[in-house]
Image 1: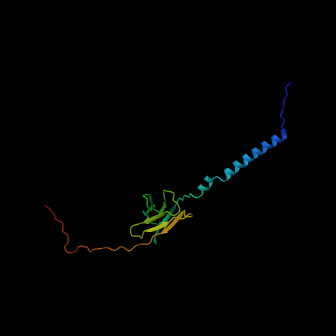
Image 2: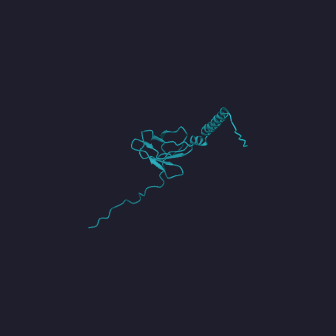
Image 3: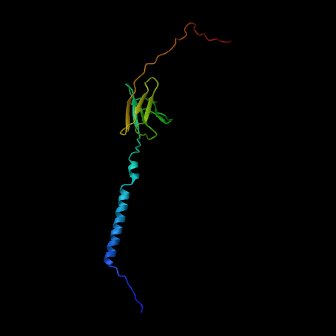
Length: 143
């Protein structure tokens, strides 16, 4: 005679176990997405687009050189003294403003720097040497 053994499990216990298993997997996925390190890295890399106007006591200056210190990237002011720097800058970058007859200015970029309104200060220029006036110049005409 053969004996047959059947294992009967309670269907309610099996269903409850599977629901708990799915719930734990779902909570793990939500926690992983919430505390992902990729989100934390995107906020520290700020890029700043800088524009502005350069003037002196009289009015706007045309042709002022603006260069990023330590690189070959730069811009110049237009006819109304405004500029838009072509490269996005980081906090701590230094822009160098130079113009003939004016003092060179260095401006350090901060996180909240978007627009620069810069007033250039004229620089005293010394002329070294004296003009030669001993002998007047005469043109030599050839006939």
